[in-house]
Image (cartoon, rainbow, N blue to C red; front, side, top):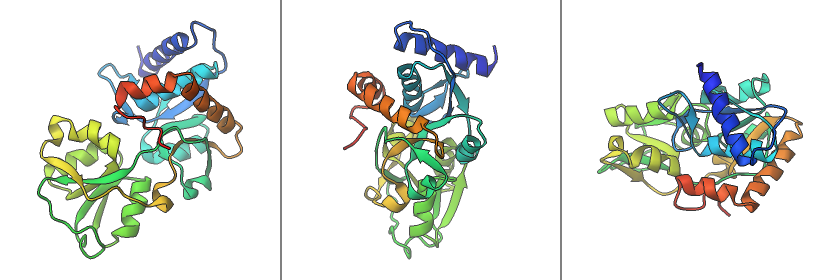
Length: 257
């Protein structure tokens, strides 16, 4: 069985459950990532799981549409959407003014802060002068890259294609600091064996210009799918589906205010 076949089997099974066995039609292709646990990760059998994955499936079910998950590395997410590789991006993408120039967004489906991570005992001043030459790692093409390049231009900023690679280099000593979504950092690193001896460093980052106003689903410019998905987000919030998915991964409601 191919990876795509496995994904489709999982999706169709979930859609049937979530719709109570009702027939679904018209495939909705969702662009997702697979290296950002607990929001998305790849299981040993090649299938994808995580908060973003479950949300994508729930939204397809709410819209009564067959759901196809299309795996894509982060830095190619928007180009692949524009090239019509898929119809929407459900991959923890922050809603920013810069991205709005290229894509349209739904209403947010969650909001969480970002914060640096460092080895316990680290003593670095988080200023332009204090980070000169400091090795900071972030995902390429993210709002986090925007923030560190703006605030710490003299740092040695290293860009990565996957969050797993960022954590690996932090542990190996090739990085001094790493900036990340706090929930992903907790479950994807700090609460794992790999993250022993590491902790959050500094305060939550407050930078709306770079980090945006929440996490939304991106669609192509002018696509009415944005309104359909926004209505579906509200529906799964109202009917308890969102709460069930949220509780599966987190101890708090990550939707935010």
